[in-house]
Amino acid sequence: MNLENTSNEFFAQITEEVRVMVDKLGAVKVLKQVDVLERELAGLKRDILHSLVVKAQPKKLKISLFGSVCGGDVTDGIIEEAKGNLFRNL
Image (cartoon, rainbow, N blue to C red; front, side):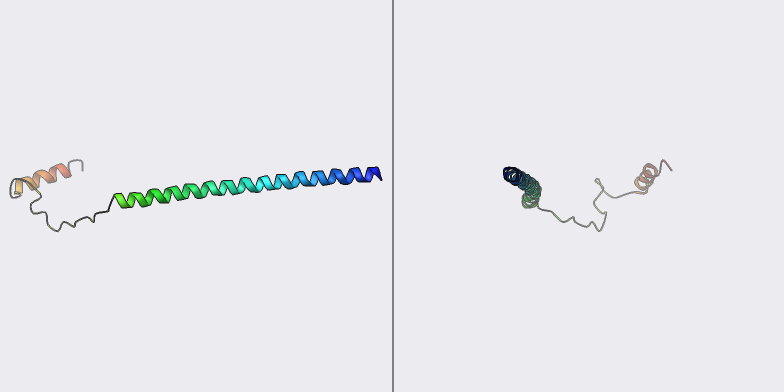
């Protein structure tokens, strides 16, 4: 009888220790998931603040090159010089 009570107490103690270990593993998983969510939230906050501070300005479509060259009209010499600079390595 005494041996039976001792073995029951032993198994009860082991069962409790296993339950505590499983609880700890569950807590570790939960904490890791919370960490992931915190990092994701911080990234979202950063993106929102960035979008509020830096407002995207639409790029203007340049239809004509008129006025792009300072100092007057574009002459044939300027065009030939630009072609030479552009295609010099070919």
